Length: 362
Ligand SMILES: Nc1ncnc2c1ncn2[C@@H]1O[C@H](COP(=O)(O)OP(=O)(O)O)[C@@H](O)[C@H]1O
Ligand SMILES: [Mg+2]
Image (cartoon, rainbow, N blue to C red; front, top):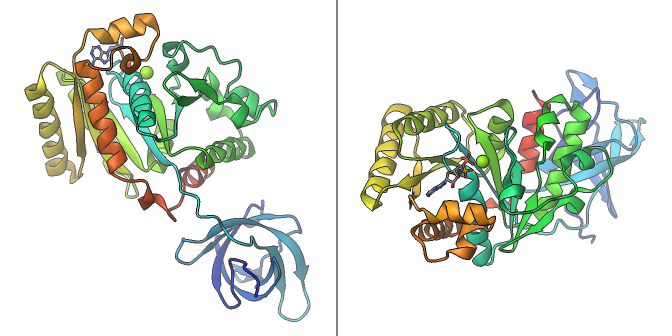
């Protein structure tokens, strides 16, 4: 018996990457021959689907647990039409990366500071952590880390570099995917370029346990796509009234999407523990009551003058000042995040597959 991942009679769903047929189409396996499966040619609105040899297919089973990329190897038009596709021998149980998008209603509330230090704290816990700088306006993670990456997403799209070539090792054992001005031009890419970008990002999943995405404030279309494709979104606010109302507004926008990720809240720059807790608890109870949203309060971070000091020194805060109130707040949030588990992601659709659907469908 072969060890391939499909069995005869198994129901599968195929999504061809074809200009004319995109599916998804439900069909079933007729027979298996080595690493080839012969499947029934599916119908599209009463007509047989004509796929050329070489077409790439995304194959899933009806539970969504099995998922692999395949190719049309051959077609048979005699008798009952069928298609021969390639089948992997076994899909390794890759632990998916957990992807967390960090955003806020108002700018300047501390997103980038939180992302960088949270990433380092997670890496200190042994999690391989990547940061994607996806702030359209002020991509500045590299500046704060005192890095001058030579390459960014432009070079990936141009075909000059592979995504793994632009990944930059950063202080604290984290990996940065530099934005540069890269994300500004995402809006101008055509569908095939977008697909290429997302496919490139998908490669990161095999290397990372956690991927944190630093975004700009306010929900532009790109940020929404990142948020919706993530496993979790963290909304950062400070304790000023308009930051709180803008934070609430962001959560309201997220609440309008049916398939949305777990939404969490971080309260930054609290005067003291009491204020941090009060703002967090008030926001989670208001969002529960008015938006019917279960927002998880991840924790608060105190106002800390050493944050500016660290920024001036261009060193990540928790590396230089590991025992400050800021660092304690960050470490506490990192613990909460890593405790909420990575295993639960097994088998679920990956961030990048969801992102591809969101980008390509718009
Ligand atoms: N807990 C804090 N205590 C003191 N200053 C802070 C704190 N968090 C952030 N800041 C300051 O706020 C400014 C904006 O932070 P940043 O992380 O760049 O925000 P964002 O990415 O949301 O625009 C920075 O200059 C930083 O020094
Ligand atoms: Mg920022």
